Image 1 (cartoon, rainbow, N blue to C red):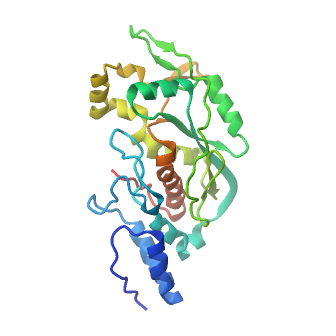
Image 2 (image 1 turned 180 degrees about the vertical axis):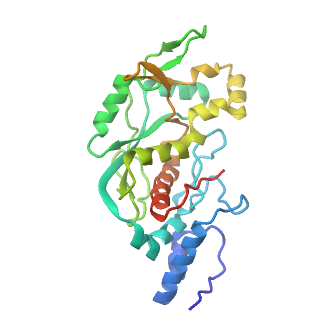
Image 3 (image 1 turned 135 degrees about the vertical axis):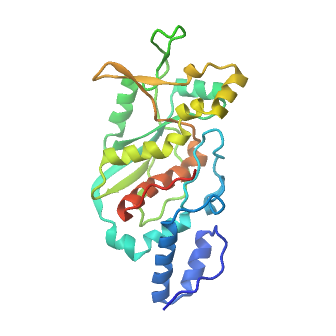
Length: 288
């Protein structure tokens, strides 16, 4: 039986969605979920994209202007509809591998953030049971400690990049119980599906976060103008780290402009979307 969808605004919260679907017969519930799934898979024009600062009933998020993390193009209600759909139930095969997605700060990242007027955190992943080892490795590596020397002859090594730690526990609404992401004590925990490796997942995460990276901001017209207004040298913010196997500096691309509490729901949505897109064979969809 065809489903006639009630007239609803583009943005609906979960309670509204549940109230609508609760009154439908079972067959129409399934058809509605399938229709919402098809809508979620379609690119949307700028006119129908969610505006920054609205994550449905999860409260306001930091406005993305100045390179800060913005919301993905899927709403929370759309993700919930996907998790309830036959397509997800038949395609999602969770593996035994789980990852931490961490948000870390250090003494010198806080100094740089104060100079820039923007929050700066290191975002990355670690295998389950290896989070402490990963943090210790970052501190030994002094992730982000290198910057170009003033005379352009090489790199100088700044102090304060060996104190990477997680911020206080995030107070976030738990993601959907049927989804692949949950909120841990200090990190997000992602259950990878069969066929999605740690390396591929982290590469997708880095691509999704690139627009909000410190490096992208410094390279942007807006970032350069902000640095000029504050009398700051862009090279001070183009950070690098020493690659131990090669002994060469590599760009510290995982320094991200985000506020852990305010942008936490948007980051959780990115993690969910990476898994959804892999399971359903879709391209990663991010707001422009």
